[in-house]
Length: 371
Image (cartoon, rainbow, N blue to C red):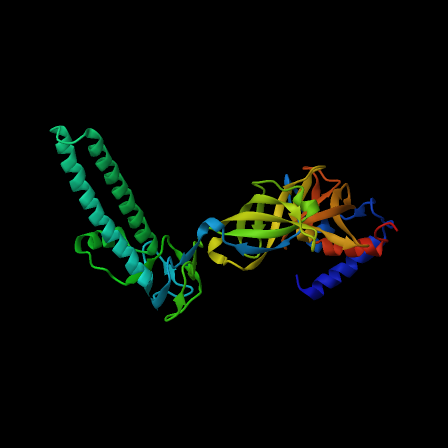
C-alpha cells in the first residue's frame, strides 16, 4: 500500500473511529474486520520465555591464563635472529629464535663431565661387585660403589634436564653425548601451537636469565570479563548463558567475583566463549547480554513492532471482542527485532503484532492512557 493511499485510508477510518465512544486504557478500541485488513493489522500469540535477557553490559575479550605461554631465555644470551613476529601462527616445536650464550656452553660442558663421571662410576661399581663376590674386598665397599653410581646417574639426569630447559631437544642432547662437541648457539622452540601476541626483544639485544622474548596465546579458547552491576550479578551462577549480540557469539559464565569494585560498584564476571570465537580477538571490547530466570510471573517474547509507547510507558493491543484493548506492559529487554515483556498476558493471549501505529494513533485521538 502506497503512503498516500495509506494516509487516505487512515483518515477515512479516523471518521469511523471518531463515531465510537472515547477510549481509555482498559477500554476496547472498536475495530471491525474490514478496518483490520485496511490497516494491515496482524494478530498473533506471544511466546512464553523462562529466561529473559538483561540489559547489555560492556565486556573485554581475554585469554585464559592456561592458554598463554611466555617464552623466556634460561641464561644470559644475545639474540642472533628472532624467527617469528607478532601475528604469526606457530606450531608446537617450531623454532622461534636463535641465541648465543656462554652460559649454554657451560651447561653442555657440565653435562659431558657428568657423562664421564657416570662411565667411571659404572666401571668402578662393576669391578668392585666382582671383587666382593670373590671375597677379595668387603661387601660394604661394593655397596658404596653402587651408591656412587646412583649419584652419578642423578647428576647426569639433572644436567640433561637443564639442557632441555635451555632449549635443546632430546636429539641434540644425544648428539652431544656422542660427539662431546660444544655449541654456543641455542634455539628456542614453541611448546604449544598458537599465535605470537607480543615480541619483547630484537636481534642483537642481550637478555639476562628470565628475560622475555615472546608471548604466545592459543586463540581457539577465549574468555570475556564483564563488570556487572550487583543486581544482575546476584542472579548469575556458573553455567548462566550469555550472548554477544554484535558478534554473533555465545558463552556461559565460569566465575562470579566476590569483590565489589569501588569505582563502578560492580562485580567482575568471567565467561567462556563457546561460539563465535573466530570473530573475536584478545583486548576487543564487546557488549554482553545475560539471560536469567525470572523470579515472579511469566515473561513473553513478541516482535518489537507489537510494542508502542505512550506517556512514558510501553503498551500492547490485546485482541478483545469487537476490537483491541490497550494493556500496559514492562519491557525487560530483547534485540532490535524482538522484545521481552511482562504484564497481563497468558499463553492464549492474542496480540496485534503489526499495524500498531494506526491503532496507537486512533487510541491517542480518543484520549489515550488515563492521566
